[in-house]
Amino acid sequence: MPDDAAATAADTPLDPAQSDAAREEALRAGLAEYDLEADDLALLEGEAAAEAGEPGGAPLPVLAVVGRPNVGKSTLVNRILGRRQAVVEDKPGVTRDRVSYPAEWAGRNFTLVDTGGWEVDVLGIDARVAEQAEVAISLADAVLFVVDATVGPTATDERVVRLLRKSGKPVVLCANKVDGPRVEADATELWSLGLGEPHPVSALHGRGTGDLLDAAMKALPQVSQHGTAIPAGGPRRVALVGRPNVGKSSLLNKIIGAERVVVDDVAGTTRDPVDELVQLKGKTWWFVDTAGIRRRVHQSQGADFYASLRTQAAIEKSEVAVVLLDASTKLTEQDTRVISQAIEAGRAIVLAYNKWDLMDEDRRPFLEREIEQDLVQVQWAPRVNLSAKTGWHAERLVPAIERALASWETRIPTGRLNAFLGELVAAHPHPLRGGKQPRILFATQASTSPPRFVIFASGFLEAGYRRFIERRLRETFGFEGTPIEISVRVREKRKR
Image (cartoon, rainbow, N blue to C red; front, side):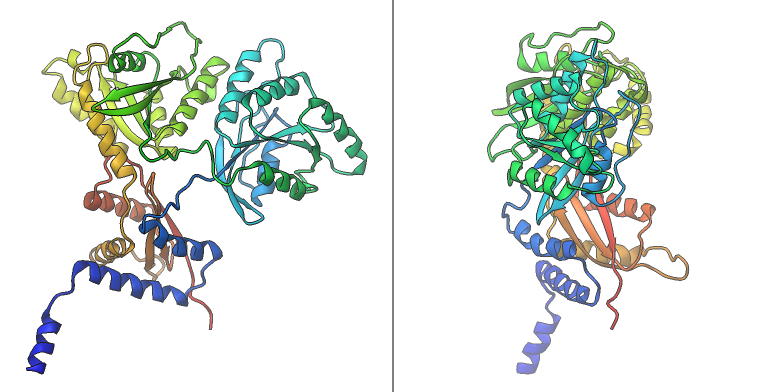
């Protein structure tokens, strides 16, 4: 009988959860043979807390580096990061994006934001300077204000100081280009800005950057007060984005049930984003209407450029972006750019095709095929066909938003993820390159909102194979309406 019992137990299939856990344990043990870096170990130690539901995804504090063009902002960013990553744009007023980088100083992790330089035209650019400054500063927990010590405070610097005071954000004043003791006397002139002690720094040579960062760490809170994390039970933030005249404001007015937002079609006119609390299906939502982008960003000047900045700011402050498209016209470059902005910001996405009720019944099948071709890169985004003017099918918007947000916050247990990848690689191994085949050693989901996956491998995984993994992840686990980020860490076996 004991032999029969043992045989029966051996024939009994393992519970899938037990099998996944056993695979995870074996793969994790195998990682001990490889050279792992400190951030690898931190990731592996932190994943258990994340899967247990502990709050491990609090937004990191944000430090924005701001200042006029050519004061050395990007050089300073590169110095802080310890690598040449930020690109310096010498042309005033042409900088297009604010770029975020993960950074660390004295054991503290934070997000470093390199911002575009401000226009120097002190005669007619005041309002635009204020707009750009407000966008950059509003997304930060503290500001690193960079001034050229060899030039001294300018009229533009003084206007920015007024904006900084109005924002109420902590400000650390950096007196850059202090390459030696002789220039330190010039830095003392910056006391006149009224922002406290100017910290003399040479971003080019690294002089004084340690003291500057120590001061910045004192100004930064431990957890971001302006990140995307929303308190439990708080209203979810929805950004209505799209090119001008596509119907964003009309849709918001229809959702609210009142003429809350005024649309101005005058060329070059821009508006601040309009936040509105809306009750829909028994829930409260924050809807944010944004200004459209009129021309190509790299050709935009003045108001068009700052409109694009405000649109980007609204996306970054939201959790889900509803991208409004015009069904009566072909997809434009502006449409594609707005979709790309939302993806790059890591936000959940819903595509809303406006004026669908005006489409002829015979035209709709052809339009569906055109949409499939135009939006092949975002076939995973839910689509709602509606009319912003009449409200036709607008009630379908909330279920699509809820589906996208649910996917955005989905976490796959580590055991299940590795079982999925094991089956995938067994059926479709990575192609041989140079007689070698990279092995996937272990994988974990580093975070949610959006889902970010880290794969440890013995060799480089080609971009095509990463896209294949993403495609299969979506087929298996859904992820409707959310971008997915997959990063690969190549690790070599430890030399004995």
